[in-house]
Structures are given as structure tokens and as C-alpha cells.
Length: 129
Image (cartoon, rainbow, N blue to C red; front, side, top):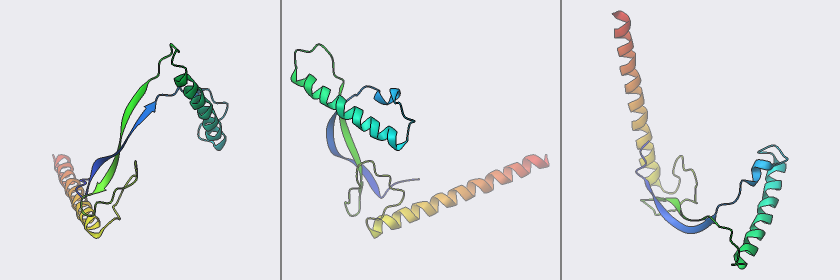
């Protein structure tokens, strides 16, 4: 669907360090509460090691650092900025954005119905031949 009521803007810039794939060796099943608790504990331990590594600048190990732009949706009508990575299926920040979204959704539904009707007509023609 078209998304004319908003645009993506940069709302933050941060540096990320690529961590090892610690979760690959988990003794717990992926997605369980125990898994996430265990993974958080492992990442905290790894983060402490990284801090110590950075302090020890004589180390020959390499760090994989990335600069990451954080994108957020901003309403073009009222300027509201939705939280980072917030899925916005339908805007709720102002009446103008909601009205635009409703209009676009109705148009998309009409387009789908029209395409289905065209396909149905083509199938009927093909069946008659």
C-alpha cells in the first residue's frame, strides 16, 4: 500500500559491535524464556570482555564496528515521530494521517477487487474456448 502520510527520517546514529553467534551453542531451546535469560547473561559477559579488550589496546584481535542509522517514521502532517522500528499498520497520530491512510486503503481494496474481476472474466473466456 502507498504510504503518503509519512516518511522515514534518521532519528539516531549509533555504533554497533558485531558479537559472536553465542546463541548457536545454547543449552536451551530457542525462543523459550530460559533461552533469552541465558542469552542475556552470555551477552553481558561478552560485553564485559569487549570493554576489557578496548582498554587493552595492545591486543591483536579485531573488532567489527558498524555505524548504523536508526530510521523512524514521521508523520508529514503533524510531525509525530513513531518509535524506532515501530510497525505502523495504521497511523493514529492525527486526523489528517488517518484520513489519508483510510483513503489509500479504500483505493487499494478497489484495485484488488477490479483485478479479481478482470481475472475472473479472463478465466471465463478461457473456459468458453
